[in-house]
Image (tube, rainbow, N blue to C red; front, side, top):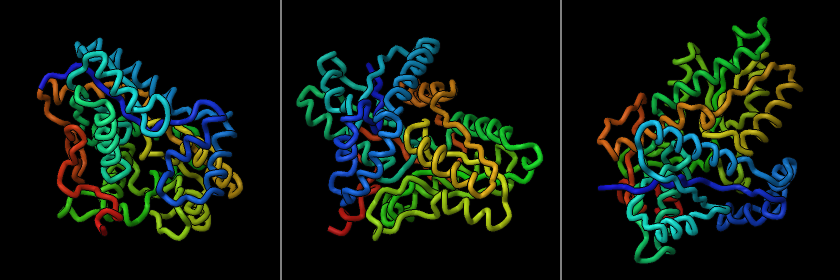
Length: 349
């Protein structure tokens, strides 16, 4: 197949204070999140002027990808669409249709499997193509890239840089802690194609953490979670990073390097949950704290995008380091396998 564009598909975020609550209502629609939790999360955004950094970060990624494409002879314009806030993916795909795009590759800003990390992006594609009508471009979502060598290298260098910010006298005993976005336990159990054993998301996170730790010489590490947003009666992946810091302190650990391995960019959940809440908790515990950067601003990330694109343009061999399965592209939003990563509420119906 010949392709004539790339669509960067992301989560979205508000860029004005008055957009914060409508954005959060889009994010949580149908999930039963109580209004008081929405108000609490809204305060996180308003703390930063009501502006999420995610759109600006994604525009930076697009600019870097365009420059990398120009250097590498990839002749594809790059479009930008979001699930939850402007530019909405429906509007972007309609513009692609009007620009004459017939077939495009889609790069999701999630490296992972599971419903939220993978299948929901497929649903975005289906919804956007339906809105664009009969002349909607064919859309092929690129594969999961959680264990791509360039991603692991970028995280490993970020961990090394963070370790240097730990006081020298504590550096050798610093604990390496990886974080990723928590999801409901039931959603993790359903993550993956039927017959794969489930728990694909948490298995991939653990595998990426293992690869990053090995690349930086850490023989031991922890994987914990952050950014829980669901109803309190629903079990989510644990422990939470803040609770984990308290547990580490109780074991006499006085220095931590935290790597947000589950995130591509320093968007608001990373800044609030780690740079504010976790850092403040560590300070209260007398614990030295350093947070590794995310790879989105690293030049290797644009190279990663180009490599994934070349897998389709030039039949380049996929590069992977992990031991946990990573699944391939989807066409027009069709999942990799029937029943793959379906939400548990659908499997029960």
